[in-house]
Length: 388
Image (cartoon, rainbow, N blue to C red):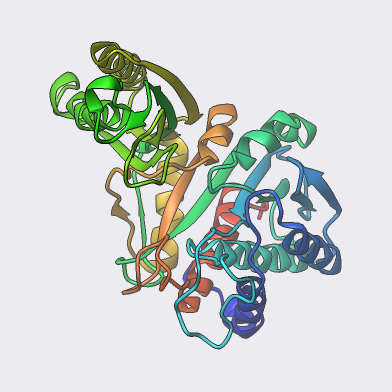
């Protein structure tokens, strides 16, 4: 099953949908325009059921095949939200919302799944039911968790679930995947150090929170370099350092640091949390201050299931003639919550030689659309074949 002719015919329309979504980016759960557009199109395609408001602003569409003897139900998921980044692409369809842009390609994911939904609604050449899932708030909000917590999997009887993400640096329309742990667990750090503020000319009369927090930032790097087995990956990143004073001559009373911890195993995750607390509280105590640590376990490790991964790779090979083994990714992905509830797989589709995701010059490559749509359709038609 190479790229389907129908998607070549639909390419211009799907591209137009994608660029419209790109012009109107929405952050986290505020995907009101995008969600309404998705629901409108799903109804126009003739989906058997369209439900809004799942996981706050998520949309679910149900498409029944020509037969239902298999009794099988497959979920296909795309994310809809954008990022709080000022766009610098210079394209004619650039974001119209200052400070927000589709810098991760979720506009492309949404458009490709809409294209697949239209095709599947037209043809219905499968035995079973497809549930198309359009999710808000992947970029840190946990929209996948919210949709699962709303009972989505049980409500529609979803038995397997599949997801896709574009990947810059890989030829457009080619695929890669790996079984087992794929994307890292991502945890969020908020740490407040409190000492005794005072005049910068009299540091001996203060408990210097800037010095205290600086030592902690340095020591946090020792978790990955000295506490974790070198073959078990971990990334600790402090991304914000803010004092309670902006004056040149004041030693601040408080300092707040923020960041992330990324791990690939439950054991490494437990160790990271333990050491973050021990290091920050220990450093603060050494200098005579206190540390208040908020370690927020955010997205779990995203784990592809073996059988579904092999099947997803076979479908990819039938579309593009290849499917490479993907590298481990230390970024997070809240499709992990759906894979914790149901077996399934997550695949990467090449975006070509473009800027990396989360960059102000990134743009989804519309040339990947036919391959992505064909993969979605192939998942359904090959997993739920009609009896000959």
